[in-house]
Image (cartoon, rainbow, N blue to C red; front, top):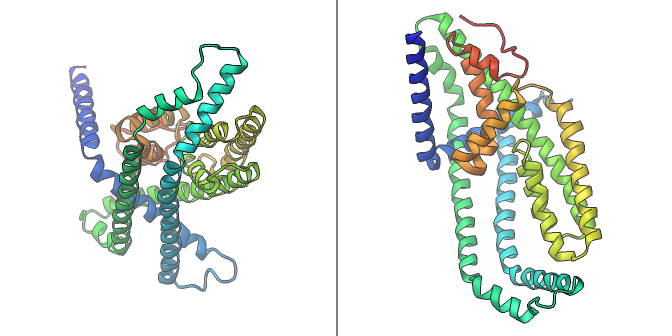
Length: 353
C-alpha cells in the first residue's frame, strides 16, 4: 500500500515537472512538433502517390518523395503568403469596419429610441482615441514576421528529419543486443507511424474539402477576404470539438459589420454551420473511423490541457500527442491500464512482452 502511494506521488511529481518543462521550452518544442507533422504528411502523400492507378507504382520512391516535398512546400508557402498578406489588408481596412460598426450601433440606438445614445462623431472620437492604428500595424507586422520565421524553421527541421529517415532503421538495430527488444521497438514505431500518418493525411484532406466548400459559400455570400476565412476554417478544424465554432465565428462576425442586416448574416451562419455538420458528422466519421482509438472525454481533457500549455498549437497537436502516448503506454505493464482507460473501446492491442 505504502509502495503504491509512493509510486503514485512520484508519477504525479514527474508529470508536473515534465509539464513545467514543456511550458518553458514551448518555443523550441513547437517547431519540432510541427516539423514532425510536415514529415508525416510528406510520407503519407508519397504513399498516396504510389497507390495511384496506372502510374503510381511506376514512379520511383525518391521521385515520389521529391514530388511530395514540392507539393507540400508550395502549399505551405502559399498559405503563409496569403495569411501574411491578408493580415495587412485587414488591418488596413480596420478604419472602414470601425465606421460601419459605429453606424450600426447608432442605427440600433435610434430604432429602440435611446435618446442618450452618443452621436456618430462622438463615438468615432471616443473609439479612435482608444485605438492606436500604428500600434496595430506594428503588431500585425510582428505577427507576420514571426509566422514567416517559424515557417522557415519548420521546413528546415522537416527536411533534416526526412533525410535521416533511412538511417533510423540502422540506429534502431543498435539500440539493443536483444533481437526481441529491437523487434518490439520497430513494432511500436510502425504503429505510431501508421496511425498518426493516416490521421494527419486524412484530416488534412477533410480540412481541404471543408475549406473549399466554405470558400464557395463565402464567395457566393459576398463576404470580403473569402479565401483568407476559408483557410482559417480549414486550419481551425484541426482543433477537436471547438475548432469548427471558432473558424465560423470570424467570417460571421465580419459579415455583421459588412452587411449590417440580419438576413444575410443568418443565411451565412446557417450555410457555414451546415457545411461543418455535414463534414463533421458524415464525411469525417466515414473516413477517419476510430483509427486513433481515443476516448472522446480524453480528447476533450487533452484539448484543455495542451491548449493551456501551448495555446492554439497545443490544441492542434493534442490529438496526435495523446494517440502516441496511448500507443507507448500500452507497451509497458505498469502503464498499460492507463492506456486502456484512455482508449475508446479498451482494445489497445496484444501486450508485446
